[in-house]
Image (cartoon, rainbow, N blue to C red):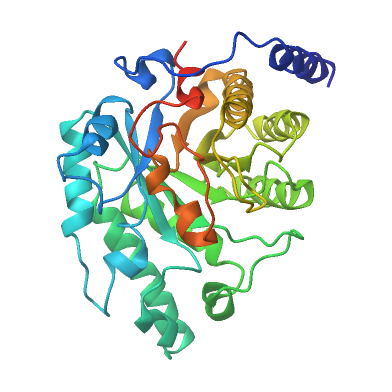
Length: 344
């Protein structure tokens, strides 16, 4: 505890001691070259392959990629016994050609399911067969190409209870354990992650997840890592909360993936212009996050992944219907202070 307190004080002090404000910088050198762990981005197949700056940044700046959508069940498994591999295979080919790690997202989730899964009316044994077939068909297809998988995504509610998903309703709470065992059977070499949001700012949810992870490991379930999504903002969470969360997660000994990083500058949804002050606050928040991550033991640093490349591609604008500028590159694919502060 004393060591953690000293670390926390050190990090807070670093955050207070900023260099001169950043405006723009040269992005000629790849961002991943500044770090000993993989630095990745979520890739949209709508954007990739159009011969734009998106392709160049995706290839040069990052040495890890995560599919934003094309690995999700609604894309990969459109009908019973039907799998659509074209876009997912194209991303796997892109990552291999670019010498990038491919992280699979996601096998089991309660959203972005195909309509036939929602309407499925089989027996418990039929649901079990559907569940197992989906996991193992996808994992086997990418065996040797995907380094790690988000096996289960967002299974816990804010109060720490299990979310009532179609999987829990039809298979019971043991579906989480089964998902990891089935994935491990299909590819024993892949690293398997549980992935969720608000673990940085909600200690009740975080401790429920960590308790479940401890139980799974005691039972010999092949869970190798934890993904903290880190959809954060310049207002929330506080830096002390980030340090506390990573300190607690470190104690699990699991590999830790900052899996879906973006830093919103307009979380309240007001009329906003991305001025110098807002972008500097964004850069400072991101710098603190990455510095804190760097303090983790090296063997627990699976890497960091930004949930997109350019502000024009961010899910936040689509989902929340608001102006925001949460990523490393602006709408014209120019590096922002958030990029510059990490590249020095």
